[in-house]
Image (tube, rainbow, N blue to C red; front, side, top):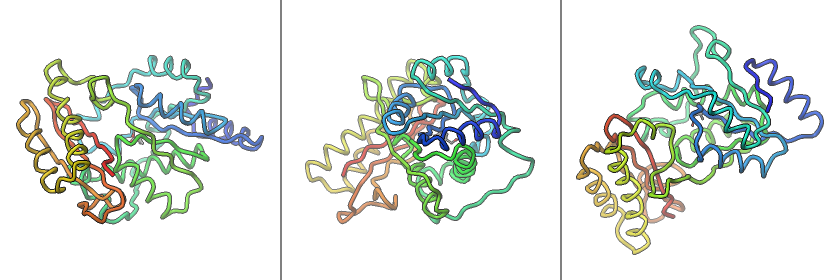
Length: 279
Ligand code: PAF
């Protein structure tokens, strides 16, 4: 695997490959890689001839400086996992390589930015778009792979791609779960043994919501029952459980073409998100 830390070197290298007719599949990450990331790489390997992964803990998407400080950065283990997975290129820049001082960014994506995660993490998706736009500009991927686990992020990036007319195809890949149902996340390493048990209530509530929907229950009942289940779990603080239209992320109704149940909760000191597509 080739490892680059500068924008110029990685983009020159990829430019040569693209000129030779190769297609580039891109998996942007913040490291602390787990099976979820590796499944994105596997998808990229199936659909593109060269696979590029980036590892960059992006400061502009953290609204809590403590969260940024404690974000795991096991770079040696990550490199080993990427080598084993057969990744072709790693881009691992420093913050100073990616940002000049006092840079500004704003793209109006309407209410999509302010719903759900946006309410609890103001500015988060502007930071995500800022860095993903920069990374797309450097890597110039034909295809970019994002996990469904941050469903709203996929919608946000998709909106940015269409508003700016970026020449990249976005591919959303399914959530990878532990055997007991917990969605894989780099943040799971912060869960204590007790938290780990309590965290299962999230996937349980989502499964209950899907079962209720399949059984013809009303959306408001499903939402209420799931919220109650999580609220009664010790050590767990529910932020939201919403049943949303899969395209707009506004509250779903019976005529929504696609419907997603999305949840965010603090389990101990760790904030977790998860979702399930119920239609
Ligand atoms: O999903 C993530 O890991 C990050 O938000 C991303 C897309 C790599 C941007 O920093």
